[in-house]
Image (cartoon, rainbow, N blue to C red; front, side):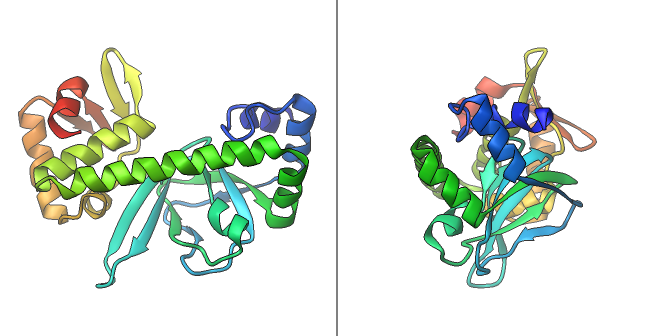
Length: 227
C-alpha cells in the first residue's frame, strides 16, 4: 500500500491529493503485469478501466486505411491511458500494446467516476493532461508533415528523448529503444529507411546505439535540426 501511495503521488492527475485520498485510490487499484508484445487495449472495444503505468513502456497505435500500423505515442512510468473512452463511454480510439514487460495499476470505471465526483481537482488535472496531449499531437503532426524521411526520423528521436530520455554525463539516454519497425511506423517510412538514417546519424556523431539503448550525443544540435 505504501509503495502504491508513493507512486501515485508522482502521477500528474493525483499529485495535489492528500495522502488519505491517495491511500483510497491505491486501495481501488489492481496491479497487473503484461508481457512484452501483449495487447492491453484494443481499438474499438468498449472502455471499462483507466490504466496507470508503474513500470515499462507501451505504444499507442491505430491502423490506417491500408491496414498499416501508425504509432501515435509511446508512454512510460507515471503516464495514464484509457481515460478517453472511460469518460465518454465510447469505443477505444486506439490500441495499446506493451513494448516491454509492463506493470500497470488498473482503476475500473465506476470507481474512477466516483473519484471524479468526490475530487473535482482530479477532473481538472485530467483535462490539463488531455489538453497537453492534444497540443503535443498537433505539434507532432505539423512537424512530421513538413519534413523528409530523415527529418521525420530525427523528429521522432527527439520526441522519444523529450518523453522518455534521461540525462547522463551531458547526453540523453533512451533506454529500451523501440524496434526499427516501430520507429518506422512513428515516422511514416520503412524499416530499411530508418536503419539507413540511424547509421547516418551515428556517422555524423549525433547518436550512438548500444544494444537497445539510444544515446543522443548532440541533443541540442539535433533539436535545432529536426524540431
